[in-house]
Image (cartoon, rainbow, N blue to C red):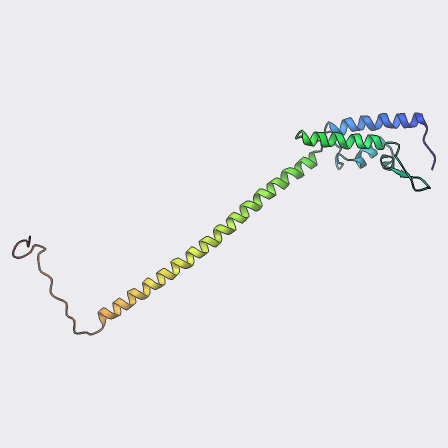
Length: 165
């Protein structure tokens, strides 16, 4: 592979820096992200130039634009620490993740509430059934023949001979 000239490298670095500024300002193209792949595509340079190279002897050397990739990643990290996200898709993903987490918490609360209501319903049905059985038992006891007689009730609610006090 042919090496690039110093003039081409400077021209490519200027293009990469211009695209970096656009991406960091939030001007992310449709279908793109605020990443190295989009940076390389918009600048018109090979993405492999942003990564280290391996010499034939096995030693490593930096890629021609690796320092720009590291600077780009540092700028993105600084923006994230400041609370802003240059990539609207990434901001939307973060917002949706927090929304999903909130919905999961609400779902767990609702499930716990349903369990409590189910237990309450079971207790209430058991109490109603017990009360119904007691009512039936008392009705049967009242209807059954026995040697107990009910006394006639007095006609008036006033004691016939005055108060006992």
